[in-house]
Structure formats: C-alpha cells, structure tokens
Image (cartoon, rainbow, N blue to C red):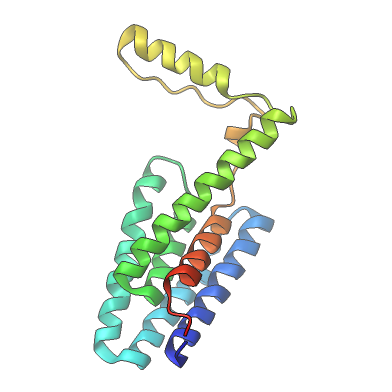
Amino acid sequence: MDERALIIGGCIVLLVGATAIWDLLQRRIPNPLVLAGAAAGLLLQGVLSGSGGILAATYGLLVGLAVFMPGYLLGFTGAGDAKLMAAVGTFMGPLGAFQAALASIMAGSMIAIGYLLFAVLFRQTASPMTRYGLMARVLVATGRPIYIKPEQGEVMGRKFPFAVAIALGTTGWMIWQWPLG
C-alpha cells in the first residue's frame, strides 16, 4: 500500500473509530468531531493531490451526504450519521464515498436485524410484529398507509448507534476494495 493510501486510510479509521465509540457511549455524534474530520479530509486531499484533490473531496462530501440524506429525512438515521458519511467522503472521493456508504447501510441493516432478533427471541422487548401487522391490515383495508409509533420499550423505538455501522462498513470496504500491495 502506498504512503498516501496509508495516511488517508489511517485518518478514516481514526475518524470512524472515534465517532463510533462516542455514538455507543452518548448515542449522538458531536458536530465538532465531524467538522474536524471533514476539514482534515479537505486539507489532506489538497496537500496530497492539489486542487484536484480538493475537488474530489468536495464531491465525496456531497455524495456521502446525498446517500444518507433520504435515511435522515425518513427518520432511519440521525443528522450526525449523514454528516459523518459526508466527512468520510472527503477522504474517499465520490466513488469511494458512494461505495462505502452502501457498505455502511448493509452493515447497519445486518446489525439492526441481529439486534431485533436478539431482543425479540430473548424476550427483552416487546415485539414490533403486532404493530407492523396492524399497519399492514390498515393499508390493505383502506389503501392508505398509516404509521403507529413504537410502544414504550419496544426495540424499534430505541436509538441505534449507526456510527458503528458506518465504521464497520467503511473499514470493511477499505479492506476489500483498496489495493493491499
């Protein structure tokens, strides 16, 4: 692996690792940490690749934000998650940001399914299936979708530290995609 990739990869791992730990402990991602990550990505790309690097970092920021924005708008992720993926995009450029974002969404989906199955199978929470069944029956009967909020204590009502999924997805993508030689 060349020096540039090693430096960029180390910065990414440091950023996603710090935010994942923070999100696990506090259930939020601090803006100063994400802003510092985005600034570091822009600066590093500028130093390593000049104006083309700054342009690629900017496009990466926009792509990372664009991929996670629908999830934020629909309430699946938080604003901090979208901003974190944008910051990661500054290091990776547009294609890397897109692929890492998709890998992060896949990692988050697997974690969420595991979390749900564990909680329901071991009876640590109320099952959301009754609520989902009622929403489906109303949709079939009336043709209109409704949303019923999760019950108090239901697994689907708990905050999910999605920075962990971003850390796993991004790091996994780097290991799988980036040249190792």
